[in-house]
Image (cartoon, rainbow, N blue to C red):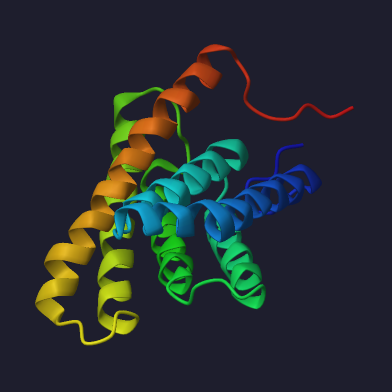
Length: 180
């Protein structure tokens, strides 16, 4: 029985796996990319890579939000950077926008278009939130143009990396973990 409104045990396991991926990438890879570039591009790639895969694997509303909130909370408790909160907040926005295609990330143009739109809006919003609240002496102009723009680029690159992977997994008919 496939109940679309509730998380199954498999969904919870997948959310846990993608939350762990979020934690590992945000705690270790994101600071490294920021040290190299001094821009949020790498962080945007990492976040939306994880959120898109989590959404594809579960196909349910709330999975991306859960991954973002759980992952960010643990990263913060482990002493990670405070701006990760902006991505936790925008994972909710990402989830809401994906209701337009019922959280279906398939190779259809409409589904991929909604995924890219959700990624772009969420990434830009995360950049603006970070620029306004977490960068000292930042202006609104800086947050909306520079930081929002670079985070948007990271989100689009994340989608450009992840969506072909999802397409290949769909083509190989790898959708979900099968019950034993």
